Amino acid sequence: MRMRVDLAAAAALVCLSQVEVWWYGAGGAHAVAAPTQAATGAAVALRGRAPLVGVTLAVAATTVDALAAGSSVSLTAVVAWFILFSAAGAAASGLVRYGALAVGVAGGAAMSSGSSFNSFLAASLSSVALPWLIGVLYRRRKDAGAYEERVRRLEVERKTVVEEERARLARELHDIVSHNVGMIAVQATAGDVVFDDDPAKARAALRAIEDGARGALVELRRLLGLLLESDEAAVRPQPTLAALAELVERVRACGIEVALDIDGTPRPIGAALELSAYRVFQEALTNVLKHAHATHAWATLRWLPDALEVEVSDDGAGGVAANGGGHGLAGIHERVALLGGELETGPRTGGGFSLRARFPLAPLS
Image 1 (cartoon, rainbow, N blue to C red):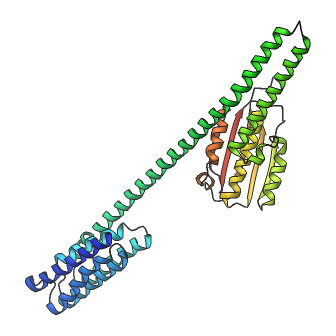
Image 2 (tube, rainbow, N blue to C red; image 1 turned 120 degrees about the vertical axis):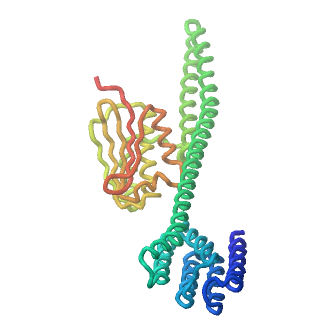
């Protein structure tokens, strides 16, 4: 559709140029003005496909007319230059934008030879700089709008992913917890009734409670595996921070030099917190492997008096991991937030990317 519009505009300008030349004597001598003015109008056909070529053709044709006939003033030239220079200014390529500006200034200088500097400046500003600047401003506004739209779309996608995972987790938790806790409550009631009269039945109820609790733990672990990992991984014991060295060695085997540093004195923490801290390390190092194009990474675990800090940084592309195609960072953010923690991500000083998660701990007594 755009090509058709360009061709129609070029055809109209070619016809206008011949009317101007033969009826009104625009552009100087007919023998020179007719083809050069026609070429100026025809150059508009290249506005969308090759704006720099179109600008060069129009400027060259108009310059030849001016030098040969002593005049190039015509409506065809004014309209064609405005269309072509505005299109070149709006081009995505900097080479096209600034190349067209240079061609226009050179053509203006050639046509203004023998004239005053003020005449050259006025012609260049009105015929070249003004339409070119309009095109540049249009391109910047278009790019800003596209960026805002992309940011909005990514935010909507992130929220959708988070909401879907929360809804799925809520459904699964309801099924697992309601079944097993309900069974535990029933067995506890039954055990209490027969505790004094029939100890054997009371012990059977306690064993049923134990089995139900263990079953609930197995199901919850399987649920976590289904949400975050493969089915094979879901049946394995959940990793702890003691497995960090093994995780780092696996990453080193993939070609990344990883330095592991543990500061402070480890102490017992909840299983959920320990698993979450391990998963943050795992996801961050996975992002380094997949997206960062890094050669070195630094993994640090800090045991503070009132917090546990997890930090992973690399010397890679700087922020690429944050913009990757998956939802890893969104998952880390949710995992940290559910435990009351804080997550900071961003470019690393000196190049690369850095991720730091802080989980609150009960203060040491």
